[in-house]
Image (tube, rainbow, N blue to C red; front, top):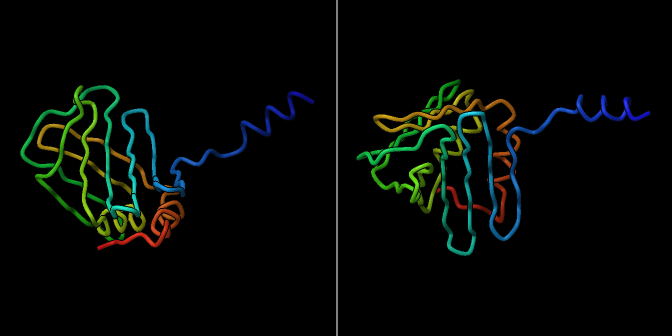
Length: 142
């Protein structure tokens, strides 16, 4: 019986992308190389996007960009990013993330990068979780 239960647990697909709804809504995904973590605080309203590289940190650069490859490609960039104290994480904060959410929902691969660092995220299974995140407390997407 234990073997059957173990097989059922192991055969159950894990949700790679995960949205949570609460006072602060989140959308997250993890790969062997990096984590991506978005938050939305409806009381502000404010979005954050944090990309943490697991094997090496980020360096301070003049810009941060994301590119989304797939049926609806988008590329966006900003000079308004900050590094964590240990430089493993890079964070962008803004009042609107519509282009980011469109990129995550409608494409196949996301790249978070600077002029000398890159993190890649496959978007398989992201769309339903992005929709949950979008609906979070009537999130503003401007």
